[in-house]
Length: 242
Image (cartoon, rainbow, N blue to C red; front, side):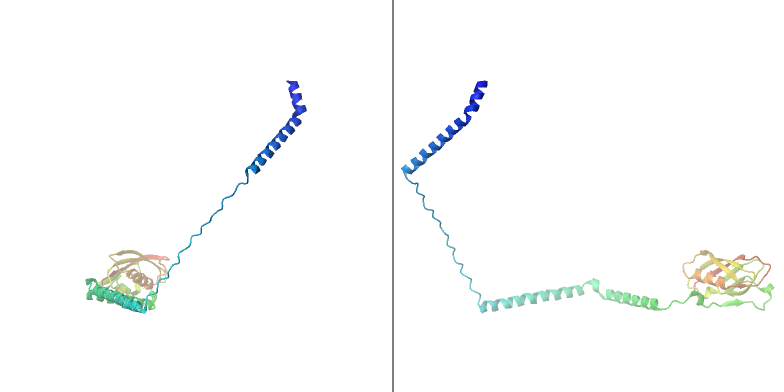
């Protein structure tokens, strides 16, 4: 085996040279054979071009045909306007748009106008409202009662060993009715220094508690240096709807 490997290594280049020589020789014979038989003729290549047909332009419509189409378009527009007018007339005949509806619209517009007019006015401060008062200056304290009637309405207060000198009467401002009790705190000088709404039985008018509180704050009792500071009491306003 070693001998074969050695023999292969010694003669490999010679064998390769012999093979290359024989390949070249065979190639020469093949080329010579082709020349002997004659040259191969190439067939001509024929390319066909398709001829496009010319498009014949359409002749424009004459003025006569245009004039004939114009009345048709005008008729279509007229028909559309007529349909629109008919729809408006039918809507006007709808019972929904009858005289009652128009009156309701007018009333709503008037209401909006009235509200805007009211909102544009200056709202006066509640402290600026004038209230009639019962004044007991110069009256015998023994004859002064703690319940004051004004028509069907009345004002009743409780402040131990004290009586009123000035008692505002807000019942004339009332539009609604009900009874409101106000807790009051009175200084020895007789001035009400604090007032809070305690209850409001049957009161729906939102202004009545405001009137009652303001009337309580404006109330003046007799001075008493020996009284508690402050002295707590109550004032009850009974409003009757005017």
